[in-house]
Amino acid sequence: PLSAQAATRRFGFEGVAANTMDDITVPKGYNAQVVSRWGDALFSEAPDFDETTRGTGESQALAVGDNNDGMSIFADGDRKIMVLNNEYTNRKIIWGNNPDGKALTDDDVIKGKNAHGLTVAEVKDIDGKWQIVKDSPVNRRVTPDTPMEITGPAAGHDLMKTAADPTGTKTLGTWNNCGNGETPWGTYLACEENFNGYFSAANEDHKVSDELKRYGVSAKDWGYGWARVDERFDVSKHPNEPNRAGYVVELDPRDPNSTPKKRTALGRFKHENAEVVVNADGRIVVYMGDDERGEFLYKYVSDGVYAEGGDTDDLLTNGTLYAAKFDDTGSGRWMALTPETTGMDKAEICIHTRQAASKVGATTMDRPEWVAVNPLKAEVYCALTNNKNRGIKPNAGGDPTPVGGPNPREANKYGQIVRWRPADGDHTVEEFSWDLFVMAGNPTVHSDANAGSENLNAGNMFNSPDGLMFDQKGLLWIQTDGNYSNKDDFAGMGNNQMLVGDPATGEIRRFLVGPNEAEITGMAWSPDRKTLFVGVQHPGERGNSHWPNGGDTVPRSAVVAIRRDDGAVIG
Ligand code: FEO
Ligand code: CA
Ligand code: CA
Ligand code: CA
Image (tube, rainbow, N blue to C red; front, side):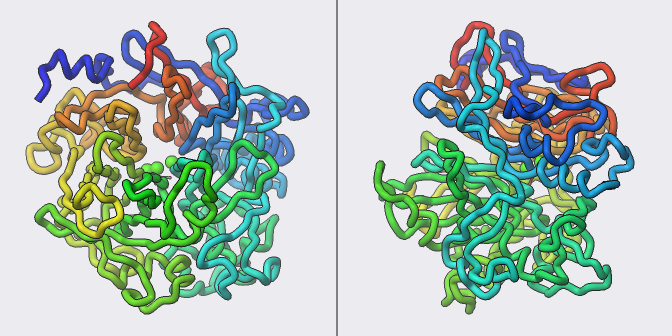
């Protein structure tokens, strides 16, 4: 292990204490500034954010979406392009006319809908402050109504056909985009997560198919009310519509007129992020989690190889999906999802991916969130955020969730980070070995397994790891989306936070604490690596925050830019 001093040099900051302030806390010698907030105008024709009404359907379509999650920064010559996932909305916040969180008018529903999708915006450092460049030619909102192409094995399959699209190859929009990814060829990957919560049926007694049930689709939506303004969200009338969501969507951030592509080859589930790595032989490997209690961890391996400047369309169109099976003793195997192993055809594997993974006996996980590949070695990390059902209830498809392997605690309330090393350093092979990088817990409250692993202490404890990303030095940045009560099992942990872990030593240090009732999610570096952009999602989701503007203002999800006071590179 490194000496304490060397470890400090490697981290480059002093740890931040847990707190419950309605603010962003960064280490001594660092500063944070708000770059963009939900509702900020992207175009000069759009009004400024209205604190009272909180916008209209029309203004929202021209402004930054709500609840930013995964994000990237792309360089295009001198231009920097920020792409944000706008995962969902807090209904008690977006509708200024009704704090009960129910849409009163059709336009309320349309505003909520337009707050979903993606935001593409040029950002620029002007006089030391990062800000959105209004009216930049790259600025764009992608909403649940933006035309998209369906690609890959599921394109054109009967299960993908609807009244509006009898070809099963063209669809409208993306929503509930959680984590993200980037390809080596400079495109953005937006990952569709809880797509089910937007479908409903006019008749609440309507019974959905078992196939849709496995994905959580039911006759009741989660309160968004989209079927009220858009009939395709009525699952009794359009039962195939939910089959067209739950994918990874590829977007060219440099062309605002490009048609985003749904990449069905990467499978359909509640996608968290998509971590892309070019294997030594040039094949593209994409690691992906399915964030649901007792669902699975996946990887995709392309058939073709990547060549700089070559045609890349095939790389996310033709390939093989695998689901992970872990044993209890530190080894595991990727189980190929093929017609031979599942009895399903290739299209069906890409549409009913969860069912395919159940057939090969993949391991039910404690909600796999982000996956991150170590840039210094063939080693992959995944945040398993928590799982109150572990050892108690099967997953939604009925697969058992026994305690064991990388999911070692019953009713897991704190989460853990698993890591694995592919055999021979080859990301395409089936065999791997695994261990836990950290088991989160509270050593000030518990002395059993809920105290967490040895690299956890009263000064760096946390719960519910979610966002994961490596920096160029090979340090692992960890973001949390957990219990912020700061009491009982969570006493002393404070608000959601960001930490940095050192894979070589196991040391973990807290870098940032978020405002009240927010999660910290999404991060990206500026091309010169001197700014770290970090996402703050759902501040005040229970009514107790006025971040970022303070006073009596409406809480707003935002992106903050973090820099060192001395201007040096971060991480
Ligand atoms: Fe949108 Fe799994 O977090
Ligand atoms: Ca989230
Ligand atoms: Ca997440
Ligand atoms: Ca989460």
